[in-house]
Image (tube, rainbow, N blue to C red; front, side, top):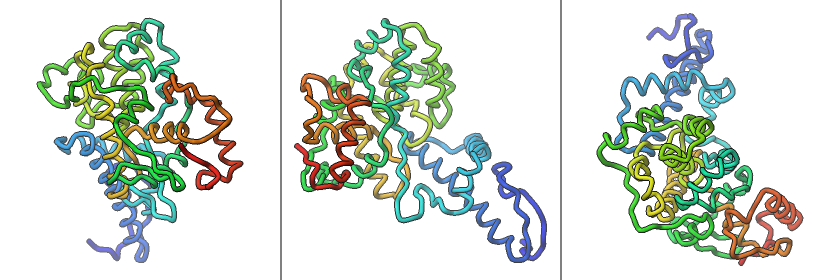
Length: 347
């Protein structure tokens, strides 16, 4: 390549990023920024896909889809890659960017529009506690602080000298989901789930979360389609949040028989996925944490020695901690000096 010539061209093959004028001194730098931008983005998306489905193939069609996704990124998001401030999966700087797809507010918004018949169907699926979820948006700064204090070898979290155990039993108690005795199945005969692969426009990346949300918004029946879509949406929005915008189609094998949904070992599976997500986040320096980060937030709230609330131990913590109570507690913590303050005690 002749680096000495001055010419104008598109920054990268993936689409209309920003056009750059190349001259004797600036061509190499701007072109490198451009190439790195797409390569960095491409690498992140591929890791995301592989995390969801280790056997996924990155075909020509998938590459085109990734290129289109990069092309359609908002300018400020795209600049994070092109300017090289975004290194693969983690921002360079004094403080790591903490991102998660765990979105309890989105699940609560869907639940708010369910009919009574649909809510009863959700209870029959074993998710009755989760339809009482009303904690608002995830407190990301708090969750980032909690994740950094987790000992992934001993499955404990250290809070100002107090160690809390992280376990599937704790997860079950806090999140209101249980183990029914049957292992989660993530593979099988694709013909069994073909109808839903087609219904949800599944791709090699999986099922887009927005498609599930839209499907539920328009669904007024409490039939099998509703149960399958609601379980998938609950998994991707709260219980087993992916690091991308797709949930693996392999989950269909565990929810296709709706009568068996409540019999699956969801507590163990979702807890294990969270711990795997935290380990990957720390070891691979990722920006996104996969899994039910909400569990850490609610466990934290429920472990504080705080006299402002009389806790009814008969109520599941995920249902107990609503938005107003959390707001009161956070104000109290702030008055005590913040999360790191030794004045905040834990039980």
